[in-house]
Amino acid sequence: MLSYQHMYHAGSLADVHKHVLLARALAHLTRDASPLLYAETHSGRGRYNLDSPEARKTGEASAGIDTLLRDKRIGKDEAYLAALKRFQGQNNRLYPGSPSLAAQILRREDMLWLWELHPREHAVLQRLFDRDKRVQVFHADGTLGLPLRLPPKPPAPKRGLVLIDPSYELKGEYDALPNFVRRLRQRWPHAAGLLWYPMLPAMRHEAMVAAIRGHGADLQVHEAVWSEPYAARGLFGSGVIHWGIPARVMADPTFTIPTLLHSGTSRVGDASL
Image 1 (tube, rainbow, N blue to C red):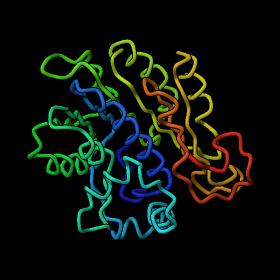
Image 2: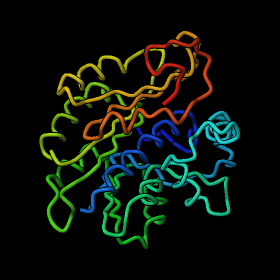
Image 3: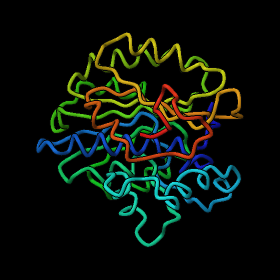
Image 4: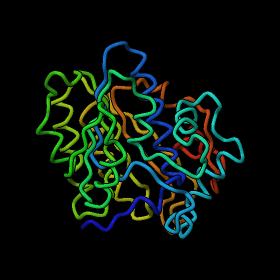
């Protein structure tokens, strides 16, 4: 039940796809002067070492962020790139999980609510943000914990952004998420949201995406694909369902990923964002 360890996948193509969109959403929302509450349901440890044995074992960071930076596939004006550089400082082998990426972009008056269920990952996350007064870290599954705190009560900001990023290793997760998104939007109508999902050959994401999109015309889908489903041993792509953020903010093509696809895929053209 608690076997998933994101340290094996930090900096992967899917991670960068998710983080580029998250950074765009946060940069857009923080243009408004009023405070913002960022909530994350599955936070991980928040900080990763790309030279760790776990990262080297999969090679996903090498094929992901290392290749993207080397080949200059990330636009120089991306909010993600600026936040990444601030987080890394003098050590470019550090990689921010989404909580750390958000913390780099959010302002002094904003707040972060972070949930993580895995005991070891939660302990690392807690230590990472121990001195950041903007942050509250909870030891629980955020899909259970977040609804209990909604709608946010003062002094928490009324506006928000939620990132939903589960492991998809738990039985029934694909089936449960559409209802969670529906209830979340009802209880916190002033929040935008991002839900990340893996694109695997079994195609289990398709029914989930269709069910969630059936809840409203404002729900948008952004997918990045780097292989054909039949050719993939693992992920062949990465998807994000988002709401509350203009489509133009998420779709600007300033980031391209290495791809095995022929041009003309119906998802994102040549695998560009």
